[in-house]
Length: 182
Image 1 (cartoon, rainbow, N blue to C red):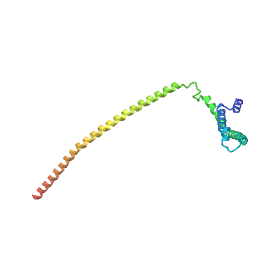
Image 2 (image 1 turned 90 degrees about the vertical axis):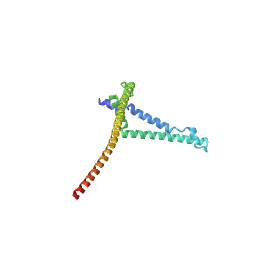
Image 3 (image 1 turned 90 degrees about the horizontal axis):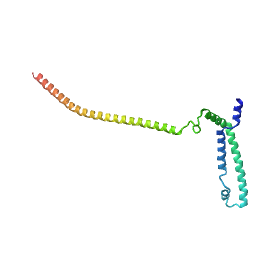
Image 4 (image 1 turned 180 degrees about the vertical axis):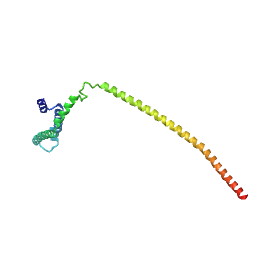
């Protein structure tokens, strides 16, 4: 069992290999983006022989730079244990069948159907909430209308109270003048 884990540690997983391959391809594309013709156009005053020597020197620098960058990348991968982490991730994905793109259990049609049903359910719920809100709005409008009518009813009551007060005051004034006159 221990030998198996040691062998796996020596053999990089596909995720680790893919990372390294992708890095090397990207680096190669970046460092070889300049063709010989484009390079020579950058130095129009040079002779053909000077172009050739300068281009060979450029190629040597690019190759050296390419090697140095690859070594630095490998060093960083070792320091951060990126390969080990990617291998662990790969093991977990395989162990728990977490990769939906590779899983045979994944059914795009069923997933789309489930999503569609969930959206329809959500739509029905929201429509119900909208109807309920509209009903509440109508109820509040009716209640406001009732309150406005009651306010008008109270204004006549206020007038009646004012007349009663005036009548009482007049009665008291009239009654008190009679008492003082007698």
